[in-house]
Length: 516
Image (tube, rainbow, N blue to C red; front, side, top):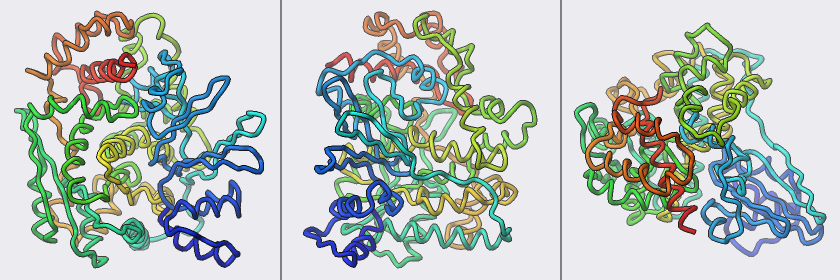
């Protein structure tokens, strides 16, 4: 809770006495003073439960962007909750059958299953910006305490005013996530604009003894496996304590099972193992890092946003599907066996969410959906899982809710100048090397899981040809054989390997469900 000191002072003025110095007691006292309304006062990343002894009721809540996880399972006798789905499975007695609706999401939105669903019928997760209360009679009551407004403000601002406001809000977000740390803070420096800007802003704020970390992998003929060319320029300018980690492919394959074990849910992002290995090294030196997750979703950095704005055919959901979905519904039906075939659950859900009030244009609705829902189960969860596996805390200033509220109201005509992320580029100009600002949008490179061949292909073939996979009855063999026969030909619209997706899900099930 980044503002816990201010809340503590306010609660002391209201007569409360404190017996500790951390933020946990502040949550308890805030709950005692304001009840469920205390959530509006909390700035930060959190998932917590409070047992109210007077009412014999349990109150649970999750932060606005779901940065911190909250899984729960309930049967006729008990409710259990944890920060990881496998933790609930370890307790036994959980229905581990596959949720057909969640499976559709999993293979359409590259591993995203929006809350409250999970891949398993017996486990749910609390939605971001949501609380749930179970009273003395066992009744569940839920509520949403925050919504993102993506409409234009009443008074229009000039471009410079938007830039100045963004600079101020981002500085404040970075400062908050640094000031509450009583240990050295580092930055996951990818070589992109977002993490480079964090380094520059920490320097601007007078942060000394800054640690930065970069990771790279073996090149493939189609793609360079690192972005050191750019991260080195930031290091040259600001001279932090910097470490570069170059991981050979054989180490990636050898450590992949560990990374999969650290996944609370199956994750298709190819950089999960990268964050896992990088976090291992960082945790030997420091315990808190700032990371650039959320900047692309909040400030419009991905290529498909531009395509959606330029597309004038179909409704908003159709435009998102054509540029973003990993598989159309027809392909999904060819991929899964009969028990898992059903309606176009993802398409229906996306259309409903994009049509919710509070967004002026289609692209406003898309960015709002991305920032509040899709990002939760893709990069944010991935980074949180992989860092926490090593006791490393990753803080994400670009998901400061006050900064996101500001960005969501900025007109797309300003936000998407200069190829997207225009506001961040303007803020960065002069404090981040021009080559980093003006470079094409990059993605955390993990070529061996994108262009699947050699040992990686053998690894995936063994998983998909295993007895466990065949007996599970998820995939149609004709679809699996098609991918195995030409894995480098079958990529999603945002360049993920479809073969890796099938293999990863099956591998996760074997290690987390079958192994029970």
